[in-house]
Amino acid sequence: MKNGNILVVDDEKGQREILKTILSCEGYDVVTASNGKEALKLLYDGVFDAVLTDLKMPDGDGMTILTNILKEKTSTSVVIMTAHGTIDSAVEAMKSGAFDYLTKPLERDEILVVINKAVEKTRLLNENIRLKGQLEDRFKLENIIGRDGKMQEVFKIVRKISNSNSTVLIYGESGTGKELIARAIHYNSIRRDKPFMDINCAAIPETLLESELFGYERGAFTGAYTRKTGLFESAHSGTLFLDEVGDMGIGLQSRLLRTIQEREIRRVGGNENIKIDVRIIAATNKNLDEEIKKGRFREDLYYRLNVIALRLPPLRDRVGDIPELVSHFIGKHSNAAGKKVTGISDEALNHLLNYQWPGNVRQLESVIERAVLLTEGERIEIDTLPLEICNKPMQIGKIDFDIPADGISFEEFEKELLIKAMRRADWIIAKAAQLLGMSYRTLQYRLNKFGIKKELYTLHQKV
Ligand SMILES: Nc1ncnc2c1ncn2[C@@H]1O[C@H](COP(=O)(O)OP(=O)(O)OP(=O)(O)O)[C@@H](O)[C@H]1O
Ligand SMILES: [Mg+2]
Image (cartoon, rainbow, N blue to C red; front, side, top):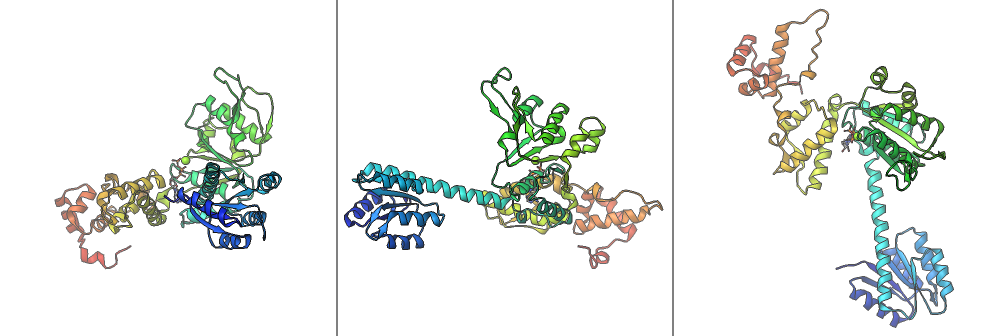
């Protein structure tokens, strides 16, 4: 097994060879250099998890190697070897950023323990760098799908407010991407390297929510055995996302209002005011105007939160984004499940375009996830979609049922409906009859009555 890449630098040939043997036996890939110049060249060309270098060498010393590595900001850990009695220089090296030091004569077990730790540290650092990069990528606006005008509007505001500390209120039905946008605001702001904390205000009882937000002192109530830090404190200098803020109890709303106004909190059971610097982003799927009218939401809090308002459109109002979302989710879930699904049939996509999506993007994502799992070939077909998406005769909400002041022609309306159904059913009467919830004979009779024939309507077919 490969354990990591090690560079050994020592001017004594015998020493280099012993180290190489010891480390190779443990599964490390070892490269050696006899002087600083050679080592720097190797470092420049390769990637090492750890460098084990002698401190004093004729052509300059291990310190030069160390400072070069640190200057390059690589995650490579440097272990210094010093002769017995020169502990001061080892301490010096540690202060300059070396990972650890070993004193000669070297002990096999000690070498292995230190190198093992050094390699592990490099791995963790690299992993963190990778994860952080992924996280930031995910919340980059370019990676959030929304060509639709209303979404573009949202992105524009997110960009504009990235360097401000203003409170943001995000409105949107369930599953429209409120949390995604909240995180995007954070990761595009100057606070991106600071914590992002979130809490769902609807999910927990009020007293619990209070201690989650504000923390408590030891002995504040029965069972408070230790002091607890609240989210406001943990999110200090970062962002706190209050999800479903419309469901917060009225008592706690007053406390939240005071916190926003005074920029300080007091832990439950405490008497010390603690200054906090937290940007608040709140989200709700409730109509807060209604809640205010019903006396369930404080108007003054509403104005404090609503400094910048973002409205995420429901998916049915941005159907144009569906194809891109679908291919995004196919990619994501196909990868995750180790499948080779790469696309979707036109027919299946049509159904997705016509559906109303009460659960919005979240629902679309789970539909695609399921379809990817069920698909055996490379393309998602209609038979892997849930019944409610394929079997709905029509989407009532898609048709504007408002009757204009000057009235409509019922016959024209009926005719339109029949043509729509036939088109949707690829001109197969049995299928259209099913879509309309009528018998084959009834439909045939009506088609004849209006003279609806495929030849007449397929030339100017709307897409
Ligand atoms: N525009 C988008 N592009 C890509 N993925 C999206 C988009 N909008 C939402 N998603 C994905 O859909 C899922 C639901 O989004 P999110 O959790 O942000 O919604 P929400 O509004 O907070 O939902 P809820 O009200 O249910 O909490 C997430 O997996 C999110 O990554
Ligand atoms: Mg959410």
